[in-house]
Length: 448
Ligand code: URA
Ligand code: CA
Image (tube, rainbow, N blue to C red; front, top):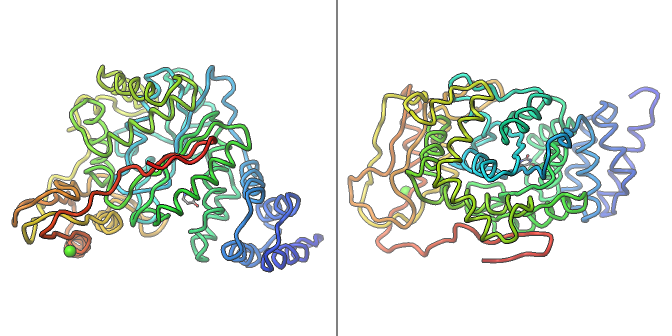
């Protein structure tokens, strides 16, 4: 902090936001640049984040923050790949394996998919952890190889490169420990800066709402979606956001290899359900946003056909091979590392399932070893939970609600306890909840 009046100027910016003022683009650029360079201390950055948390940000401030973050490190230039490139992003959920289903389907329809993904966060799973359960798979490709695979195969899902959006790396870690994660403008700038830097022309967002999501209320999810669509549109990207339910896990499997297995079974046409539904809907919007079809309905028919003909499964194989993995897992899922020991969790009473809380089930799976408690923890790809029932279904006392795939027992009782606390069985069937609440596009908000 020597030779610079950064700390002093930063204080003025904190005071302005604390008192409810609107920051200029210059002030926001200054903050991001100097913070990334290490010339603004964490305590001042924390104070500004908390001021933003309470005072909020206007649309232009959020857009300026997003862009300052997006260009804080390297950006990916996909212009050498012909056509409109598309990306997707989920704000994070449980049993939420849509990427592994939809990315190959969209690529099979002729639209290049270029996606950088993250690891699991808290109770939520991460696509990179799931992909690493495939024997040999290496998600950490160079930017050059990322672009080459998109060109050659039509789809690449890789880990985020080290120097992409350093501002988000620093700010996210700080937000995580200062109580400033759950703010719409901060989430919107965090997500969209990474999407913008990763280079795709069209971006489809899956904004989760419910107890297993960062945005618990439906209204907050719509508002977050609106901010993200607005920022993306502002920088010339085509963006659509689907608001989908995360009160119960989306798929039936929670756990890394188990989720890959479920995605493969969907692509092989062997499974229906909520995960398949949301994946097809996201795929339809990805094709539509990329201009591959003139209506979303047409996009839906195209992705369904790619699934029915097996072209999606074939694309997944090609992507796995290109990233060093054993593509035979698509034909033979027994090649995936899945725990041998399976423990059935039985219904303690008969009735209708009224609640299967995504947050609790995510936590129970994490106790079995699917996720991390510290950044250094190693996850166990083999373990997890496979649900046998969903909310609204009827069960008899003693019927299997779920199976736990385990490799060690020391957290098993705790995991069973959390799972059971997350499940309610009532005499009356619950009111059905929608799987999708609506869609936000540059044209406006559509509630379903
Ligand atoms: N996911 C992100 O990438 N950033 C956030 O702020 C929240 C979820
Ligand atoms: Ca209960």
